[in-house]
Length: 405
Image (tube, rainbow, N blue to C red):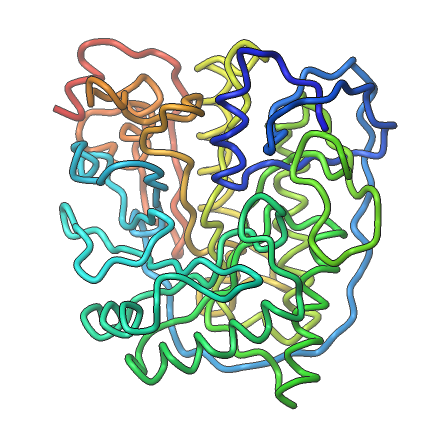
């Protein structure tokens, strides 16, 4: 298990609950002490030089069909709501287009008309909630996106072997399509698209093909894009269930906001999709952000720089060979920041969970997405790509706060 400060034990519990740990690099693992927590997400390792390992190419051919075209503009921006209700906060003033809360809701709140993305949780035992609740939610919310599982590749999250996941996915796909033929079904997001996690997905697709004699039908590909350590018995996201290896990519703490690695993982996943006949599917990054605490060097300025850089990337990154053709070859169609407000992992909070007031990061988020309210960024639409013509700013003052109130 990873070395952990006593003060970080509550933080570890939440990180595991969210499934956000994993790290990359090929440097040797840092020396670790035992930790009593089941979720060793945030370590205090002895410093070591971080290396890089390029993901190997994958090899399978899986195809399906999907006519959906993603929405333009701010509808792409989403947030995760890990606790409470989105209506506890003036979240609509962020300008977001959608949100998720890791649950199924028959009557989800939709402040400001935002979309709600459903999520069924899975495990070796089956899925939750029950079929009747899922059917009712699908019927009451036609056309919704359904995420099947949350990090089934992480043992302290949905922890499901590839073979079992394939069976559960098949059952849920049939259930959802019978209740709402217009729904879009998305595969559960792995913690990060490293070679180890891509091998896990490969086993899922192979298990489905072998059992049902047809490719796995995926309407929307779903991904989490963290930069966390992969090592058995260490901190990070560990090793996927059913895989007999001891380590994958060994990210260090300072790699957690490495933009080059972040972008590389996205492009690698799009290439992986294209090699399997999945280029014509949209891609959502349904969870990403900064979960390391501020005393590890991730202060507001650093987190805001990461936020803005990832937004710029999502809005402009295209590839003529592997991008989504129906979206100008853009790599990513939707994304969700972690999180709206979290009491255990507050580094990326957009609102204070106690006062309900916007944080400095929340103000920065709104200034980017809703620049016409007076924020420091102005968006213009150019050939289906949003471009921004002014510099980032870390300034947070009373005028900026008024953007949300």
